[in-house]
Amino acid sequence: MAPTTSASGTALDRDQVVRWRAAWAEVMGGLVPGLATLEETVCRAAETLRGRMPSRVLDLGGGPGVLAERMANRWPGAAVTVMDIDPVLLALTRGAVPDLVRSFDGDLSSPAWATRAGEGYDVVTAVMTLHYLAPPQARALYDDARRVLSPGGLLVVADLMPDDGVASVMNALDPADGAAAAELAWAQWWSDVAEAASLRPLFAERAAMFQARPPAGFTASASWHVTAARAAGFAEAGLLWRCGRHAALAAVA
Image (cartoon, rainbow, N blue to C red):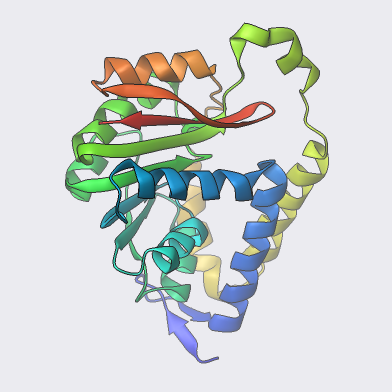
């Protein structure tokens, strides 16, 4: 394949981009048990909620655009957008699917992302994204997501969301089977990608960006997320999917 150029001007080898994104999908499958069933559940819910395919979709913290690409292929008439703050991951999105998925940088810790994203989305997803935020920022994300959704639109937030009603079961499932191997695979993926000379400027940009903002490691119960969604004005909020300690909340605007 011919080289491709990211929005930052970085020349990327398409074959490498394809391999990195495929490896990312495999790593995420290890980090999130039942990821394939989560994605299918989200898509079916989005299709049946209004009895039609969504026309505008926003994937928050969508990284290299793997989920966004799957949604765009499933819904060929939809405008699918990825928002992320990570310049390396955005470069992989832009290097792989520039004509299929729109992408832009945005910081979920600030409400400015919602203004930049605009309004009128049928579906907004945030998969394994909120744990990077501090609790007040995570709570504010529900308010901001409510703003960008069209009336009756669907928000899905998937992350570690233990059920505090069965604390003993949640504790017994922590850590999940294969969690240590999945974390090693995650670290190895970043190590492998960092060796690419074409991405070194973006890794330097990334390091400077995250130096003063380490991940918050935020984990809240499913009930916390339901309460936050209802406080933000969503008409309905509840769990759509669960696999062990991971769960997905659905909220209808």
